Length: 302
Image (cartoon, rainbow, N blue to C red; front, side):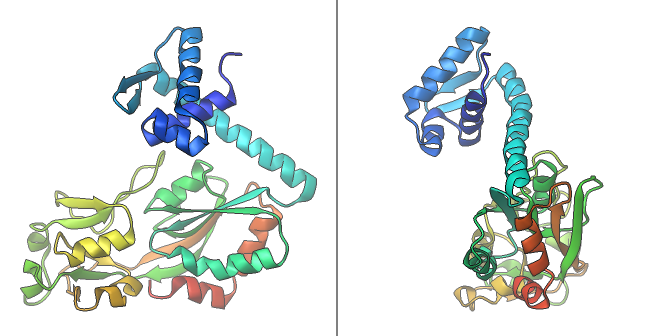
């Protein structure tokens, strides 16, 4: 068989990281080994999988079709490994927990510490998602548990959720921003004239969501919450922030709250998980995350 799971992992890494050198670093291999493997596969299939420009490598239409279908095989292989492990012991080999960017990862560390202290051998992998990306991570099997997934749950089978907290973000601008001097609630027409600082939705298959942006409003998209607050404090744009970040000492005197003529409604943030495979590690976290003290710790300042 010309196409192996290892080759699919190689193609996936090159596509995600934009080139052979970057992919080799992630896979702990040398770039020449990846180049040789891809060249051999291209020769055997008699198709070009990548176009190369300097250090960049971009999938051809044929390469994209191969990888899109191949990723389904990679997910199926990963699930098979996890299923075998669960059948043998009841404990997952790895539990993948995704947090929405609104929740700092360190809030979960005391819970993870207790999990380790109990002697459980399941490996924990943490990742961040944005907006609909948490729901998408469950749908596309990138996560087993999501904490802080915002908005409504998509109409997909195999997923369950419960409310963590209704979050009410605050609209913040820099003291030197033109909107800082606006008297009274800011109407949408005036808000539309100013650039917003936004986070990009991390969904891959579900429709990407936006929040806090008006149709037609210019936006600067940044990678994380700290970058968002810093960009707003620098006067590059405006936007909503969670209370814990807006009130952080790092931004003391650098951000002020303003009222909007059409305030943003409170949004539910949920704990969500895949119901088709609840191993002992996932069950442990779900039980702990029902405790009021854990809910309060995770939802503080949201």
